[in-house]
Amino acid sequence: MDKERLIFAPSTKQYTRATLSRLALNPDPVEQFHGWFDEAKTQNVSLYESCTLSTAQLPSGRVSSRVVLFKELDKKGFIIYSNWGTSKKSKDIKSNPHAALNFFWRELERQVRIEGRTEFVTPEESQAYFSTRPRDSQIGAWSSPQSSVLGSREELDGLVEASAEKFKDVETIPCPPFWGGLRVIPYEIEFWQGRPSRVHDRFTYTRESEDAAWTLSRIAP
Ligand SMILES: Cc1cc2nc3c(=O)[nH]c(=O)nc-3n(C[C@H](O)[C@H](O)[C@H](O)COP(=O)(O)O)c2cc1C
Image (cartoon, rainbow, N blue to C red):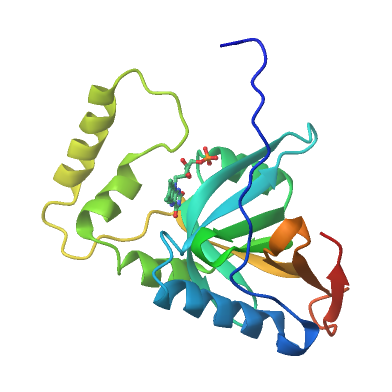
């Protein structure tokens, strides 16, 4: 096999499950998202609540992405939870508040792309979610200097043991001050439905500001 250049044969997969039309779409993209998310959930799409969060650091412009779990959708936007002390995404967001989320529901042949500005949720909101997490995950959040270089696995295990010891007599573990929710407040949301021969259906909702009405456009695949 030629290791210098890897070339794949064209995929023969055809997307045939569904179609998407303007008439079928809700005028409100958040309602539309709820509908598709519920379908992903009820149709047992694998890891339906996982999505890719992309961020970009300024001034370098370097882009990074990672999978996170989508946890809440409120009137303002889409919320994910993470470490905002040491992580790479934290450095990106602190220099550039814009971010994107991407959901791919393979079994439904659907993709949703969300772009928006971000804001941190309040400490009370983060605490409310943190309190629902299993105790071991709470201890894990306290222990891990996310994305920092570690000398060894033992070092990490030691950090976890130290947190477990610190909280051993504490009934309700508080949310770490460096951990919590990030809300992506959308200014663009695209719904993609795969169609045969790569002639897919794509619709994008855009708005100029958070109080403005959404404009819906069909866009080319
Ligand atoms: C299925 C899956 C779910 C994940 N969920 C989260 C999450 O909700 N929050 C989080 O911070 N990291 C989550 N991660 C880990 C991230 O992908 C990533 O490794 C971590 O957040 C550090 O990213 P960063 O260095 O770019 O900041 C998840 C990974 C996978 C594969």
